[in-house]
Amino acid sequence: MAGQPQPDTASLAGRLAQYVEWMRFHHFSTETLRSRTSQVRQFVAWCEERGLVRPSEVTKPIVERYQAYLFDLRKNDGAPLALHTQRSRLDVVRVFFKWMARQNHILYNPASDIDLPRLPRILPKHVLTAEEAERVLAVPDVETLLGLRDRTILEVLYSTGIRRIELVRLAVYDLNAHGGTLMIREGKGRHQRIVPIGERAIAWIKRYLAETRPRLAVGPDPESLFLWKDGGPIKAHEITRMAHACVLAAGIDRGGSAHVFRHTMATLMLEGGADIRFIQAILGHAKIESTEVYAHVAIGKLKEVHAATHPASMPQGPPGPPPASG
Image 1 (cartoon, helix red, strand yellow):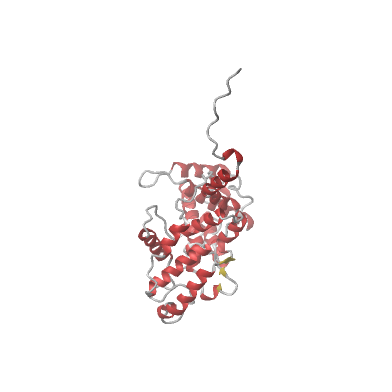
Image 2 (tube, rainbow, N blue to C red; image 1 turned 90 degrees about the vertical axis):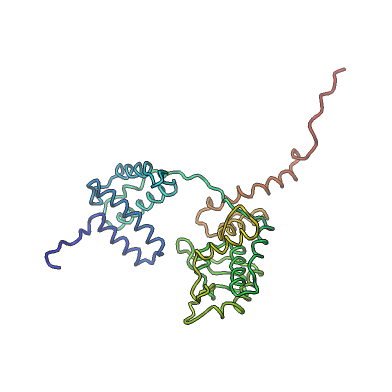
């Protein structure tokens, strides 16, 4: 409209709008778009409250002030932000300025050298034994349509260790039954990978495809492997609810839902002797450090091996009294 001021494309807010369009053009996932936009917008609002409008006005000390602000920030219940949340917000800001530097909107990235909060290595809270996993798998009533589908979902999660959202995105043609593999087309970070899948899980998928899926599919087939009762692709929260209910029904009071099968698969395979880098490839971890937490969970098995094989660990009883001198 004539006379209406145009937005300042060179401002922080203007560059954010351009950054969002750039991510859309490069097909970033919906989750990444939403998260990054929200977190950068919070930083931009914080800057504007302090009279910082243009990217060139943001220096390393300014970013460090924002870091201190996040450290002191309190939620509605008075609790501080989790370290993971603080790190995530700072990392997104750093990536935003890195993008502006690469686009020649700024001369350098003021957030490139900030020290991000160190996160403690958190071990998986819920890991099932092999016997407990079988109890959970046996919960769904496979003589019903949805029970057969749910059993198949649990079998795939247990066999492959894929993430819940990766299972939601599976298409019918992603299974190579003859080769015993599953294609993960939109994994974390939009990386593709191929993971092995066991014969038992394949057998359940074949039964589900023959008996259940044709009766769930209505209208145009979405080609998704797992369908909801309305014929559309199953949603992630529905898998969480189902898996959690099955864990409870199996009499396991430690909690856990869909992700427990990912933890369980990795831990049991390590205990069985699998190389940790093989586990890393299956899980789709970019860094080996993400996989190493399972080595700590599997320490019980290592202790058993140590006790059974190390000479000094053999039960020989306490040393007796020294012999009496003549």
